[in-house]
Length: 521
Ligand code: G3P
Image (cartoon, rainbow, N blue to C red; front, side):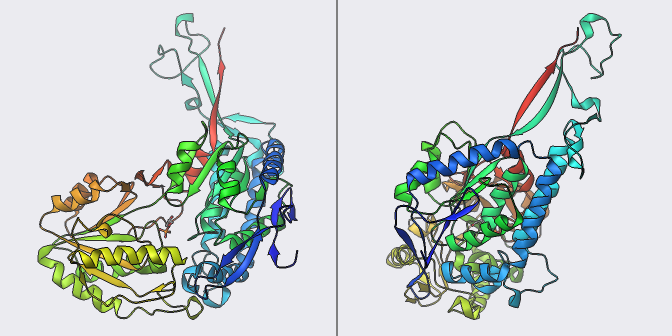
C-alpha cells in the first residue's frame, strides 16, 4: 500500500490486515517521515509460529552454513549502508558522523574502515563457529562441506568426573569399579524463538547485536524495532532477506506497543527476550514467562575526577561521553563528580569545548541535533527547570527550539535536584562538586542504576580501588563509558539490566546446555 513500509514475515514483505499504520515523526522537522504497518495480534501469532517451524531445521543446519549466511548478510549490510544512514538521519536525527557507527553513509565513511554493524555480524559468525564448534568435542560441520556426522573428542577435559573418586580427572577402563566415574558430555543447544527488541538510539546496531548471536546459535528471531528507527531496521532486515536465510527464520513486526507490545513479550511461543531500552524493560521482566532475559536498560554513568587527573583528558572525555549523539546513549556520562579543588579548572575547560559544539540539523553533521521526540525534550526541560529553581549554576543559557536543545553544563548541582539522579537522555550534564572520593563513590552507588562508571586519576592503585567500590557493570579508567568494542562483555547492575552482552556472552546466553551422561558398566 504505497507509502507504508511492509513488515517481514515468513520470508515475505506483507501489509497488515489492520489497514492501519504507525507514523514515524522526523525529530528535526517534526513531520511524518515514514509510516510502518500496525500489525495485529493474529499476525504476531503467525510470525511466531513461522519462527518456531523455521528454527527446527535451522538448528540442524551445519554451523559453517549458518556462519556463511551471516557473513553474506554482513557484506550486504555494508554495501547498503547509504539508505540505512539516510533513514537514521530522518528517523532519529543521528548526525551522519554517528551513523558511521551504525551503518555509515559512504560519503562520510573512509571506505577502508570497518563498519561496526556489519563487523559485529561477521564477528558473531566467527565466534559462534569457535565456541559452538569446539566445545567438548570438535564437530565436523564447523568446516565447509561437512555435515555433523563426525565427532572428534579433543580432550578429556570434555568430560566431568561425577564420581569424585578420580583426583586426576582421568578415567580408564582398567580402573577398579569403585573408581569408574560417570562421564558427562555437554552440548550447547539453541533456545528456540528469540524476541529481539532494540532501542531507538541504535535501531540497527543493537538489533544485529541480538539477531546475529541468536542465529549463529541456531535460534530463529522475531524483531520488534522501536517505532523511531523502524524503517532503518526494516532496511537492515532486507539485507538478511537478500542473504537468503530460510523463510520464517528472521521476522520483523512493527506496530503499536499498546496492541502488540505485551502480547509479544508474554507470548508462550517466545523462548528468550533480548531487550535494550528504558523502564519498559523493568515492566517486561516482571511480565515475561520463565525464559532467559537479556536486558540493557538505563544508566546514570558517573565520571569521578580526582585532584591528580589530566584535566584536558577529562574535559575531552566529558564532551565525547556526555554530548555525543546529544547525550542519547545509555552509556553517556550523566553526572560529573569532581573534587572541589580542581572543579573550577575542569568546568572552565569543559565550557570552552561546549562553546565549540555545533548545534543544528543532522543532515549538516552537527554535533548536537534534535532529541528524538517532543516528549523527550519536555522531560529534559523539566529537569533543567527543577535544577534552576533549586539553585544550580547554568554555565550556558538554556535554549530550546522544538526538539533541539543546546548543550548545557549545570554546575553546583546538589543531591536534592532531580538531575542528580535521573537520566535526561539529552545534551544536559550536571556537575556535582565533591570533597572526598568516598562522597563520589557514595553518590554513584546510591543510584538505582549501575551500568558503567569512569574514574580519572594518574594513580592506578586508587583507580582500581575506586573501580572495585563502584557498583556498576563496567568501570572505565581514564576514559568515558562505552559499550564497544562489541566483543567486550557489557552489563548493567541493579535497574540497568539483566545478564551480560558482548558477542561471546550473547551467544552463550542464547543457548542452553544439554548434557548426556555416559554410565560406564
Ligand atoms: O545506549 C545504548 C548503549 O548500548 C550504548 O552504546 O556504543 O554508545 O556505548 P555505546
